[in-house]
Amino acid sequence: MLSKKTKALFFSSLLLSSAFFSQAHNVSEGYQKPTDPLVVQNLENWQDLKFGLFMHWGTYSQWGIVESWSLCPEDESWTQRKPEHGKSYYEYVKNYENLQTTFNPVQFNPEKWAEAAKKAGMKYVVFTTKHHDGFAMFDTQQSDYKITSSKTPFSKNPKADVTKEIFNTFRNSGFKIGAYFSKPDWHSNDYWWSYFPPKDRNVNYDPKKYPERWNSFKNFTFNQLNEITSNYGKIDILWLDGGWVRPFNTIDPNVEWQRTINVEQDIDMDKIGTMVRKNQPGIIVVDRTVPGKWENYVTPEQAVPEKPLSIPWESCITMGDSFSYVPNDNYKSSQKIIETLIKIIARGGNYLMNIAPGPNGDYDPIVYERLKEISAWMDKNQSAVFATRSISPYHDGSFYYTKSKDGKTINIFHLDEKVNYLAPSTLNFIIPENFKPKSLKVLGLSHKIDWKQNGNSIEINLRKERNQLKYSTVIQITQ
Ligand code: GLC
Image (cartoon, rainbow, N blue to C red; front, side, top):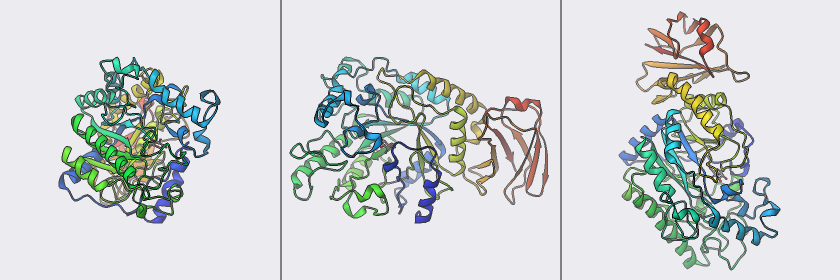
């Protein structure tokens, strides 16, 4: 359970100014440890994976705008509608929904993505099967607002059910599979009922006053999740977004965006969770920001917690600035990505890095360059990354630590965040008390390293070869 203080600390370390600030408070208090042994085991295994790929992709990619949010009447700087996309709100919505009729990402080739991501060390994928705009990127029978509808040009393509293609391809390449799904659906007439104008992100009528309509929305959601967990092979994670769809009594008044919810939006997570676990025994469910039985791990967004957490967690962070494709996005450097990965794993978390496919169905070329650079680092250093756990100290100055699960090996990562990394010729660092080093190596260097121990501190000397170390020096010590 996270104390209020821990929660406050969490967000003092925002990595970048998130475009989604009002969404940023995505760590809930009151973690409930799952009791199903299969879920417990899957969570443990998932914590070994460390590095995952998140993908936000939908018809909105054609306009190169923030996913879905411009449909939301809330007047936030990051939800602004461009005048050329419609003169009035209603014209805008019509044009946005019409994007379905031009979506034709013919370069879609998930093998290319899986290959590049796998080499870069990514071990799981989470894909937006449906975002808040309600456009299904899978073949749902519950709505025609979907990629496989005859209204969508891509429906003629043999790979039209992109969710199926992505899940099968990545699964065959050894990835674990996560389905992102938005509980709120701004296309559904049972969520934003056309009788009223939408007011904000929430349901636009009172579900208590119109129980039949809400019930119909509950069934629709249940049925879509049943389709996803029945028709798409093995799914390992169900990642449910849109935490404002939640029982009224779970609202945390300390969280700004939750204070705006003024209606009951109980979607019956027990019924949904029981169904998805029947379809997919042991599936990890992340009912994001709704603490309890169905939030099996927590999901800080665009942020790294200040300290290790005692519960399973994952930071979702964009590779560019945006979760969705925007032209000329500002992609982070490979060094920055590696630094972030190291800070996350030293605190015991997973890094879910978002890459947004464009409207043509492919990533920007620069993404492949980055993934290639990350692969080269992974080739040398992966033994210090995967299946590791946090250790005390997890961090000391510019050194970050992980340990192997059996505790016999510790890994020490040296970073220099201010400049392009160049390893110094001498490094001095502490090791945990009671750790008795027997052998030491610097990953990626072939020569024997000179090292001396003095109490719990170690000094190593690197030769000229240190010029070969990119982004970090990784020292692996075994006792
Ligand atoms: C933010 C965005 C949402 C996105 C999510 C991913 O909450 O508002 O659109 O899907 O981040 O974590």
